Image: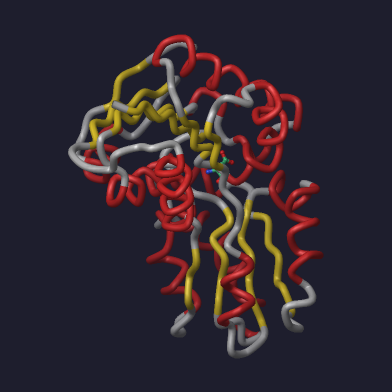
Amino acid sequence: MLKIGVFDSGLGGLTVVKSLSQIIKNTELFYIADTKNAPYGEKTTEQILQYSLDITHYFIKNHQIDALVVACNTATSVAIKTLRKKYPELIIVGTEPAVKPAIEQTKTAKVGVLATPATLRGDKYQVLVKKLSNIKEVKLFEQACPGLVEHIENGTLENKESLILLEAWLNPMKKADVDTIVLGCTHYPLASKIIKKIMATDVVLLDSSKAIAKRLLTLLLETGHKNEGELYSKFYTTGKIDEKFVENLIRSSIEFIAL
Ligand code: DGL
């Protein structure tokens, strides 16, 4: 049975696990929520790189993984190149904001991009946007959302403080007739309901989880993987996490580990 390691700073990557579990079979999946070090998006490049390397090392040493899914835009932006170089034998799939599908499908030519500060300032995002700028002329409303990951992790999304932040970030998009918003952090699909409520329009929210699952399946099939049977998952956290939330989302319990 193939072994896959998946990680994020916390609950966010579980939105990716959900999509993986819909199409990937005959696999053991290990998930690490690195909540001890969350939020990644507000850490330095060096710190994010070190967390990514430590987790990958842990997966290889303890679970002999064949594939790694970096279920985090921020860690992908900082660490994917180094991970690929260091572990050339590993199948590695990262997470990139779904800007391309958003540009292709917007009707108002106005697209919002919500992401962590580290993702938006990273070269990877800048290069992506530059590359896509010749598809068609679209105005991007880029918005870093410091603090949002903590509200999601702490279950305080509906609090006044969180609503004030979200309204300040989303109102300019609403006024400008943005019809598509890229959820450029794997945590943000967990805030979809409230984002839609504030936008109060038929805004389309795009995340990358289905594309990641598809990409991983393609790469696995290329290695001769037989995609039939079960997917067994095991979930670990390095710090505090809302266990009830995890159980509701993935119908499984989560165990503490020290890396
Ligand atoms: N979920 C992550 C991402 O996709 C990281 C969020 C954070 O820890 O700041 O960027």
